Image (cartoon, rainbow, N blue to C red; front, side, top):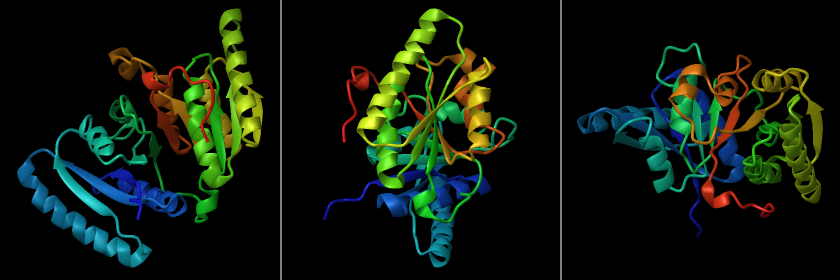
Length: 278
């Protein structure tokens, strides 16, 4: 029997971590994945106590939801260990809870971005429980910001992947840009996306932003159409300045409407993409 892939859920016994678990349950049912909780400790001697606590939680969760997550307690840092374990396990997704930009807990908006950057595995960042109980409706309406960066093409692979499971409609939004060169690059990316989505028979729409603040426009558009997910690409070679001032994706991750956000990191091995695999 083929081994199932797993969805990794960073676990710190908080309410937002439990919200991430509820999302993982819905995704796992339709993608036929297992779920693994990962609790990161400061010292290895804390692992045994954490495992006992996690085991009790998983037993109780299984009684209520008929799904029992696997679990790992490991010494490390949230900024490296989550990605290391996800890659070791060849996880399908990481679904992580965050407290938003104003949160006082560990995984605030900026810290969540630091965890995500560098991962080969996409993250879905959530702030609250799923809105719908219907697993097939979980990622039905997806907002896809199309900008001038060449990495936009990488997002289309995941659009295709999600659409196969959820029959998603893709709502593309493009920025309002006065620069002729950048505007041409946006147009080229949009044309490429429309071509691929049409070939894959994925329903889509196109909306032009009415403001120069593209991150803000994306969030408001997603809220307006009651989107289930926003799909973004993280900034390539993100630096300290981006964390301090707030990269655009950081604003989207911690959006006030608490819409889940899927984050994909640019990958050098996919830079020459010319099409989307089935």
